[in-house]
Length: 218
Image (cartoon, rainbow, N blue to C red; front, top):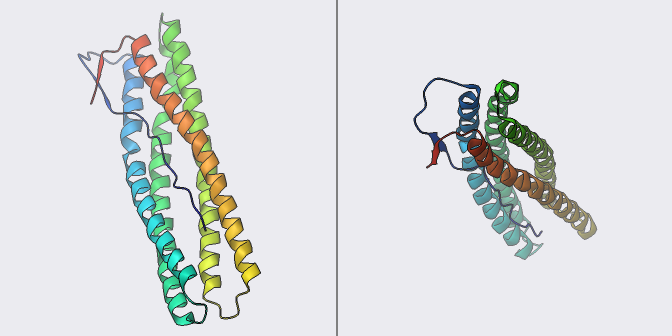
């Protein structure tokens, strides 16, 4: 079972508004945008944890495949360990999703403020592009999350299957192919997610410049 690692591009570093006085629509948008960034911190943490669990599980899978099929007890033990890791991955995935949903809810407060930006068509235009990019990013995440859940189910089926004494080689090969196809789908959606993340990061900076917001980046 060959898995390519899934690499994420995260939303940009926190920007600090300098010399803020009053609360214009632009400044309210800034607040919601930066809170969105902060709320996705847990997403970053869970991605790191998921990556480590995936590597551990891959090692167990390799040990299973390298084991003699006559040593069923060892294979069953390793499969049980792998199943435990699948459960941990499910938990991390749920925490990751909670982080994204919280950030998504916060970000939804940005769009209604765009119409309140006065006498700055450029800032309005960039803000609309920013919202569109982020909405496409969240749509990609939903697809990726769903595909990853399906991949976890296939992993679970695989390790349960490997514990069987009468497992046929063709059945195993078919399951591994299904898993690889599903993870390839996850990777492809992940590429779209990363592209939209990069677009958002750029457009956020462009918006702050167009809106004449004096920000510094931590």
